[in-house]
Image (cartoon, rainbow, N blue to C red):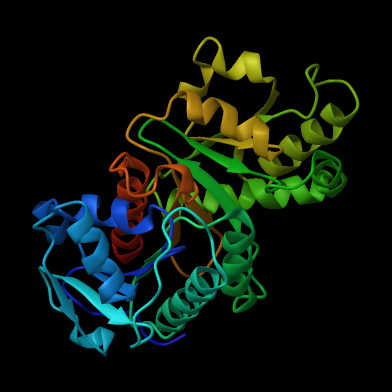
Amino acid sequence: MQEASTHPLPRVALSHGDFNGIGYEVMLKTFADARMFEMLTPVLYGQSKAFAYYKKNFGMDAPNYALTRDVRQAAPGKFNIINIVENELKIEPGAATDLSTEMSVVSMKKAVEELRNGLVDALVMAPDSPVVAKSNLNYLFSHFKDAEPLRLMVNDMMRIALATDDLPLEQALAQIDTPFLVNKMTTLSVALKNDFGIDTPKIAVMGINPYVAVDGGDKVLKAVADAQSKGVLAFGPFTLSQLFVNGQWKKYDAVLAMYYDQGVFPLKLMALGGCAYYWAGLPVVCTAPMHGPAFDIVNTNRAVPDSYRKAVYLACDIVNKKGG
C-alpha cells in the first residue's frame, strides 16, 4: 500500500451501490448539509447523470458537484464525481438489474483500487442487495489476505461486534471454538484502542445459549479467561437478558455477539442516530450504512439518511483517530 493521502481533510471514496435503490437519495440528503464538507472531501465513484437524475427527481438545489478524472484533483467543498462509465446508464428505480449490479461492482473495484493505493483515506459503501454487498466485500478482503475482518455495528449508543457474520446459524456455530473467540476479542480490543481512541477498552462477551454455562458456554468462558491472560479486558459470557434488559451493556465499550441475529436485535432496538457497519482488522477504513437498497421506497422521498450519514461520520472519525 502506498503512502496515505496528505489532503487537508479526509478524502473519502463513496461507492454508489445499486443505483436503482436508495443509495443516491441518501447520499444527496447527507451532503445537502454544507457542514459535511467541513469534515471531508467526498469522491463518488458513480455516474454524474444518475446523480443529476435523482437530484432533479427530489427537487434539490444542493449539493453542487464537480466532475474529475483524478481523485488527487478532488475539489474541497464540492461533491466530487468520477464517472465509472461515460455512457448514460438506464435507471430503473425499484429493482436490481444486470446493469445496476454490474455498475455496483465496477464502482466498488475502482474505489478499492484508489483505497489500496493510498489516494483516498476511507471508503463508504452505498446500499446493495445482500448478495452483491457480500461479493463486493469479498473483493475488498481479497486484497488483504492476512487480515481477519471483524464486522462492528455502531450507533450513537453502542458498538456490537459479530464473532461470526451473516451465516446460517448451524454454520456460524461450527466456526466457534476457544482460539477463534480469543482472536476475535483481541481484534476487537485493538480496534477499540486504535480506531476509537479508547485506552483501556472493556468488552462484554455474549454466550451461545440462553443458559451460558451449558454446552457452548464452557468454550466461551474459557475464551474469556484466555483473552484476559493476554491482557484483553473481556468479561462474560452474558445472556441477552443479563446484558441488555437492565442496561448492563453501558458498563462496557463494546459487545462481542456470537452470531448475527444476537447482535443485530439489541442494536436495532436502540438505533438512535442511525446504524453503520465498520470492518475492523483491515489496514484500510471501510464503512457502510446498516440497511439495504430499499427498492420498495425508491423515488418516494421516504429514504432516511441517518445510517448513511452515520457511516460517513464513522469513517471520518476513525481516519482522524488513526491519524492522531
